[in-house]
Image 1: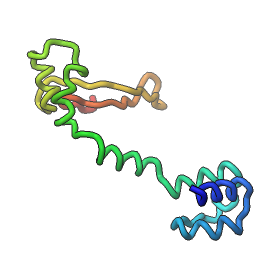
Image 2 (image 1 turned 90 degrees about the vertical axis):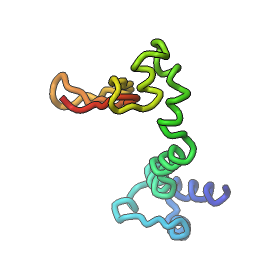
Image 3 (image 1 turned 90 degrees about the horizontal axis):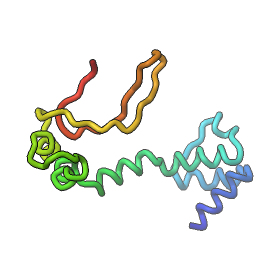
Image 4 (image 1 turned 180 degrees about the vertical axis):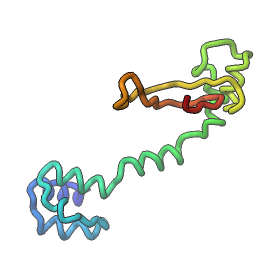
Length: 131
């Protein structure tokens, strides 16, 4: 943990001699425009290159979370409030692409076109398409 603290201090204080010694050990190369960054912005840039959160999160999801087919078989009762013997619940349990559409929209992102949105969500059963 001590090297991480030293790297934090060096980037926050702009101690380029120390930074230049540490970066090759972490396989990090800074571009010329990145070398003009200072303080918090420099530290954020270095740490994003060292431990990319998106890659780490994706790897954790792949390794630790069950597949939708496995998880939905036992989570269907939490995902769907209707009767467990109807077609929608059965389609959710089996991730049936030909079953009734069941989707959860978690985020609506406005576009430049007035009144239009990008929808970010999860399809539990059925098939969804534009239009």
